[in-house]
Length: 120
Image (cartoon, rainbow, N blue to C red; front, side, top):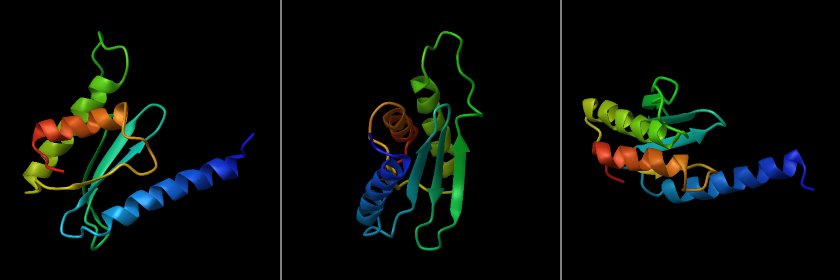
């Protein structure tokens, strides 16, 4: 059985390998995503300075009563983030999924951001 330290170091390796590919494109800010068991957090970060331009969490997006899971909430979170980015004149970003696989809630957030007008 793998220990917590081994699992954490594997996640750190995945995150660093994703970030190494993203660091090559410094002309665009990066859309960084974090997923907890209950919520999804997304922020747009200027890679040159390391400052957060804008961000959003799925805590502020209400879940519809007829929804079973959180995919709809994540989609609307991505759409709301793209509206906030458009207000700050950001239309092109690089997607930073961190150590998470690109499926489920992460993919729903990315699809919502694309639907809102962000290009990545």
